Image 1 (cartoon, each protein chain N blue to C red):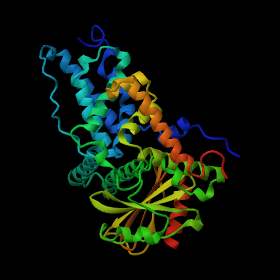
Image 2 (image 1 turned 90 degrees about the horizontal axis):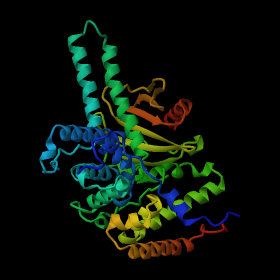
Image 3 (image 1 turned 90 degrees about the vertical axis):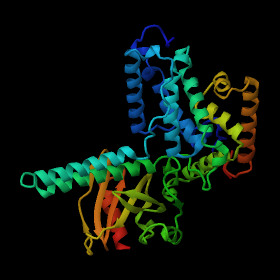
Length: 233
Length: 182
């Protein structure tokens, strides 16, 4: 039926070229320009190689920085301009930072080997995996019948919380469902509309004292359907 | 001493080396099998490359030159690559292939499974074969470039490549999905 596949082509498809994270590109460019500037300024005469001991960027540092910046801004605005800026605006800032973080984690999860720590289509495998790893037991349900097959799960760290990330599929897309304990979360289920961020859809709702965030590159409608299916089960 | 004469923009590190950042990252990712480690290693490689940039004689060799640095960083200081074998299987292709296979046509499933097996088979190769194969098939390096990057004689590169291919073919031959689907 199918002709014998070419080995080279198979290898290429099995191990596709990756793109370095934007943050790394930006960092490298900045360093290159710094070095260039230093050279022009006459360090050329100094045969000493550039110091190799540079503070290593911490993992996710720019994300943290972004989040911290959001928080600082939120706090500053909240503090100095309480009368000028509504509380809504400050929470909006914090939420933007959080959403950026979630989208980022989602994108990173799509990198080879990063999608999940536990890979299973069986909720009875995925759920116990979190026990002893997360500080709560995420509700892991099978949603195959609704068109969202369970793929696996992993631990994430979002907004200063340890979070569980359940990974579901939607046709060729991935849905990351992040959740963490949130004292402020209403016991009753509540939901917002999906928001768009850099081509991704993000949907937030709360239920059972948990804050839940679903992120996907599938359509917002899919995301709503996913939430409904997840909450129904 | 610097590449080219005069510090024209075209000869700057940014224009000569940084276009190969993704290639370096891909190599590190495949050798180390960890995105965070790959990022760290590429970062170190960039710093190293910056400080040795003046030793790069020919701009056309920038890619192989940078990949050689990345490779060295992968092996150096962090323990050997082979000591870093993952305990879980390595998801090498885009995750889409894991998703909702049931909704895809039969051929897709077959192909996806085959690709997974290819990735796993590559993973099983001895480090010295795997590396040469990755440089050739993923990075599309020439034999000369691979020789330069790894510091191996070109004959060794070729023999390792053919051994890597033979081993892969042997592994895949035994599996149902190679060749005609049955």
